[in-house]
Length: 91
Image 1 (cartoon, rainbow, N blue to C red):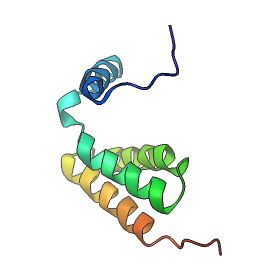
Image 2 (image 1 turned 180 degrees about the horizontal axis):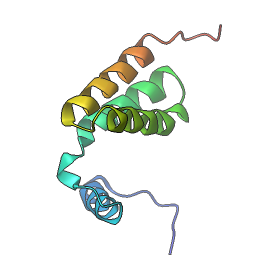
Image 3 (image 1 turned 30 degrees about the vertical axis):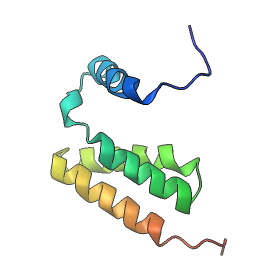
Image 4 (image 1 turned 180 degrees about the vertical axis):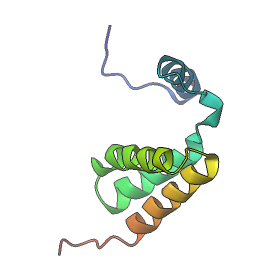
């Protein structure tokens, strides 16, 4: 059953644990706060639809570089830096 009602904040951990399990990942390795910060910065400084796509690219880059916590942090930092410097007017 699907709904258009978003999850309440307290259900986020439950959702992430279930999705991580379904994808064969360790939910404890997901830096939720860091990724939400990247999504916020991209959504506010680039465009809202760019946020989920940017997180996909962060994850892909981290995986290609080894997938460690440091790789996720580095890819997240690069995305945030680019987003925060993104021009507000189209060029």
